Image 1 (spheres, helix red, strand yellow):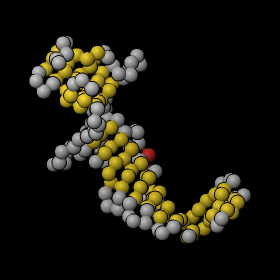
Image 2 (image 1 turned 135 degrees about the vertical axis):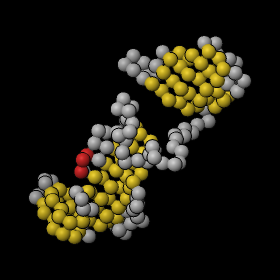
Image 3 (image 1 turned 90 degrees about the vertical axis):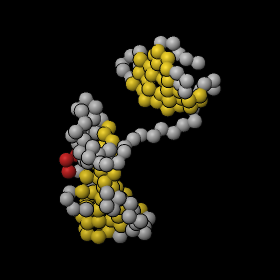
Image 4 (image 1 turned 45 degrees about the vertical axis):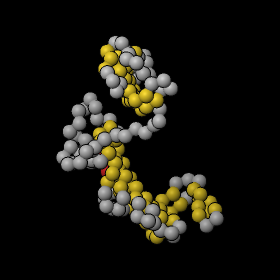
Length: 173
């Protein structure tokens, strides 16, 4: 269902739809299937909506792309390319570390990242010389040892925390 005006140049009709071979302009909204919607939601926004109420709002104003349901925004890419999760303003983050901002600093709930694995999970720090220059890693099972955390700098393990001790320079068994 097309509501509004469809203007097209050199378009080919294909199974009730159209495939454009040149520039096309659709003035109005498109509804697909059982209520999937593509249209101008006002405020210079492009709305993609499913029939069951989940939405993706792509906002062109200010270069923001945001992800919403019918009542809340959950994440956005801001105009600088930063990913904001659980907030709409990352201005409180350090400009040296604002590529990903999680949580709202005024929220009264905890924020966090959970990594799932039966082997290991890690944060890895790369530079031009090494893809694993620094590592913070939790190992569930490496085949020999279980449940320890290790810290690497210059691609070498420098500290390990096990259930029994902390080792610096010498890796505890």
